[in-house]
Length: 399
Image (cartoon, rainbow, N blue to C red):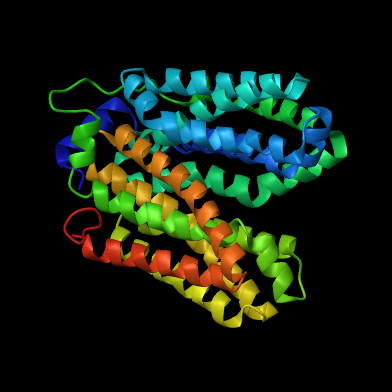
């Protein structure tokens, strides 16, 4: 739990936090929006990129893979190296960095150069995902959960609306111009950050701090174990949602299912925002249990259009809310090292994405689409159990 001293220190670091810092939080949400679009847009325009860069679609897929791997590998060390850097200056650097790498992607005709730009973007992303929740919490220390939910809403809006819109825009004006628009958006956000965000100092070096100290902090292991089990389970099915929907013989397309999922995700962010500060444990357990139930529903009634659409909406709600709740738990468990705690979460999340995709592919090959929801449900059940037993540290009951 965050102590009174920690809250006072945070309030000193962010003058005027008695007022809700909406403008600053919206800038952070915009940064999250740009980051998630930078990450996922190539997947939606992959055929066109492969043609223009003169590589196969399989090789062009590396543009997504290397981004995620770079974020996973570098999030912890780069976060540690930049802890002392003032927060606004660091965010400005990251936004300008995204503008530069997306500009290179937009104009490059060489696959190797584009790949390098994607790797550098992934490094920026790992650092930004570790930084944003802690930054948001420092802007509003007394309502840190709501602040984190507001900042991370940019990620959810990007996933549910931004990526489909970006993919459609890529088809209309071309993928190069779409990356050019991302460059312009990053520059606009950098200007807004300079104007709307306060100058928060970096973390002061302290005796006994650092990565190993954060890993040993009570609750951090439980939070990250539950997070990894959750994302493993999510990507087991989500990665292969297209074949699951197509082979179920539903009356709707995969795109419709994903749109409903996206609508649910935005509701999940709202739910996390109103529960994270006062009912963190109850909200986390409720969403994890609901996610498990949705996956069981897919397993039992996967051929029912109504059941799948309802399940997709509720499953989307859990995906929208759980990341915010998990990261809020991390900030509270390690109030002295929130950026480091979140860098562990970012690494675990990206490893879980890759692992879930691989596990889902194995299940699909060996047992077919029917095995996907049951495999995912088993992993979510493990996350529920881990969260439930972490009553003392990690997910304590409300006072």
